[in-house]
Amino acid sequence: MTGTYLAPLGMEKGILAILLGHGIGCILLFLAGLMGGRTRKSSMETAAMSFGNKGNILFALLNVLQLVGWTGIMIYDGALAADGLWNIGKVIWAIVIGALIVLWLVVGLTHLGKLNTVAMIALFLLTIVISVMTFGNVLQEGSIDGEEISFGAAVELSVAMPLSWFPLISDYTREAKKPFGATMVSSVVYGLVSCWMFLIGMVATINLGTGDIAGIILKAGRGIGGLAAVGLSIVVLSTVTTTFLDAYSAGVSALSISKKIPSKLFAIAVTVVGTLGAVFLPMDDITDFLYLIGSVFAPMIAVMIADYYILKKDMSSKPIGWLSFICWLIGFAIYRWLLHVDTPLGSTLPDMGITLVITVIIKAIAGRVKL
Image (tube, rainbow, N blue to C red; front, side, top):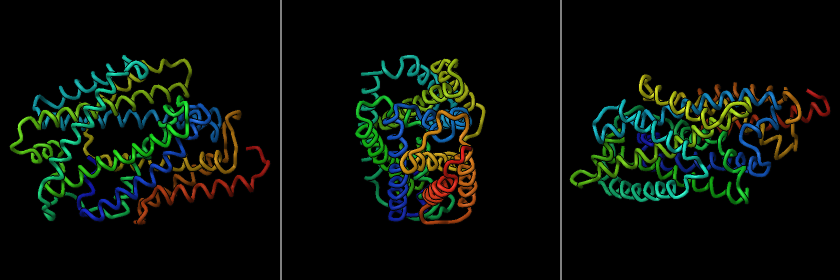
């Protein structure tokens, strides 16, 4: 769905923005995931290595909030698209999708086994079908409805997707037997598949003149029986399997706030709240939400990368890493400013580069001062 926003750029610039943005985002995603894989710590536990064992609570809270938001947005978009293919009501679809996510959570990550494998294989095959239908249409550039978007903004939206997984990836790589290999495969495969999804949305919008997912599916397969059912399966499966990860990680992040919080029940509660949000709140435009995620977590990860890979510092034994917070606040302010500056590389990469350099310089100057 985010790929549809890039259609006004046209094919050549749109594809370049998608590849560049995901290249940037997935390299950074790899660095974040490897950190958790090597230390055997969850995403919010690795945050404590820079911000202290109490300071990371702020990011755990912010992470839970963004995951509640993502859960609501995913259910909302999934329900809208599903209802466009089988009109039984957006509310009913939101409840159905929410219930399936709860089922995924109750079964549990370690017990999904064949169920999740079947769902992933089915989703892969169904996506090939919709890709053939979408890319097989005659190109009709010039019939695109939607707001204009700059190249830099398109790159930033492409970076924002892998960026949204920065605070989650270590929740999974920490369990890997081979942290480097598992993180590399996760980052590469995520990048390839996300580019594929972006391309489907962008190309379909250019070819078919609509950014509505249900409309794309129906137009792409006009005259082909059963395509609506195929599209419906894609929408529901992709929504459930992806949003399950958001809800699950919200439960893991909650443990960083308090060890007394039952993570599975918390994840289920997040799903319920997200479902209610999807039913009662408008969630049509998520660009501001993506930029907010970027402004919080891009400088956070930059500080962590500087500490772990360059400075070799670990503040997890301290309550609060004040210098890290100062660097993060500077990075946050720079990101918000960069949103008003049209750079060809978007906001994330310049912000993280500046924040990383600032962190190294400030902490080098501070030397042995304990803050």
